[in-house]
Length: 255
Length: 259
Image 1 (cartoon, each protein chain N blue to C red):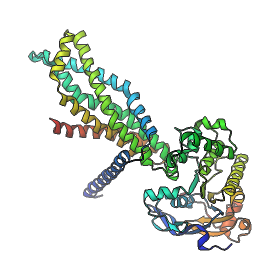
Image 2 (image 1 turned 45 degrees about the vertical axis):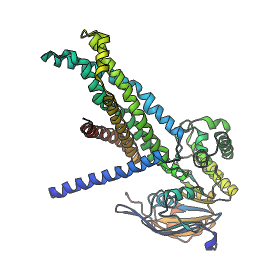
Image 3 (image 1 turned 180 degrees about the vertical axis):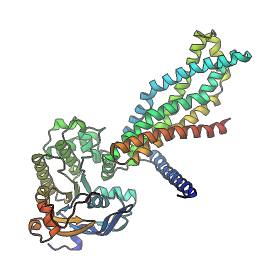
Image 4 (image 1 turned 60 degrees about the horizontal axis):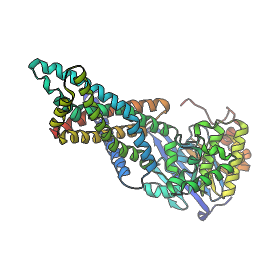
């Protein structure tokens, strides 16, 4: 086949997919913001996305903060700047690593679970059943997941920020010989509100991406168990890529 | 049987539907009179399920018209579709019960989420509906995964009838069940359709079911209705396609091809 035709086909497919995701996102946002709301569904998603993700987010944050402190200390020692460990740890965690790494872990955990659950509902005709029961699947399935993710991911990232900084503090005081109180004071003196808030804005956007990709790929799942498996993989991969892309765009806006 | 337009519950005219190059429905015309039980028969892959999903609005036909109570329902908004759906009860082939909910929440789903009924009243209605399909109240608290296939079908039937719909749809109601359980389901369907005075549309290739639950029969072949008549006439239809289907013979005009 003509190489130009191949490129054209790829561009058309990409454009079609982007358009489909855009329409899905619009319907999802509308379902999340316009009543009727299904509060029990929303509550269940708060629990699943937020509460049950705390361990994985906490563990990711503490080890990231600890490793970050060690690396900054090693790098800083090359030009006698070891004292900047608390400053760079808090900056790195709040603006970048907290939101990005926590969201990547949530993409693996939450996006995959959403795609698998909604995909299984699709292939077992449960989504069709919702329609026959006068219930809009977008309002019942997609809206609550998007709303819950946009609200809970920033809260998880805020907790990850605190745990990440404490991971850096623990390594700095136990391994690198920093004074604990001085470390905390330096951290608090250096960090600004905007450092934290910009990370939380990123987290809200990443939460939207996580839920959108999970719901989109699950909703369009086809052809039995294999289709559900493919939807799950696609949800995680596309959420991760979009998180990196959105992170670059947001970082460009926030610096 | 004669039909007049004012007694027609469902009217389908020249409905076409393709999936890519696969032209599934090729101009379906079918009328279902109010209060009658219509069974659509036909081999696998002939378009039975697609036709049912077109009527329900789960699939949009490429062309043609579908009227419910004389009003067109193709291409209507989601909001209007939800209102039309209030007339329907549907038993899916696999049950399509919601795994995350208990049996009673499944049965009462429409009452809880579409009609806004309180949980206590909805639970009572669900337990009543379960009793109508011969299920004990203690089943109400179980999850669908804890039930046998036959019990899941009965729960699906209870969900279909709980809101007393005007139209009941049954998609392969006895597929995958042993003959005795299948007969129980057929009897329950027949009894509930009569009790509600509902119009019923079933699709099946189980001739035992056809004779039990059908007043009228239509046969679909290669995306078109090729015969329709009264259930009692199905064995003397004079149509070679129907005769082959009824006898289940390999010999005849219907050729089973690998698709």
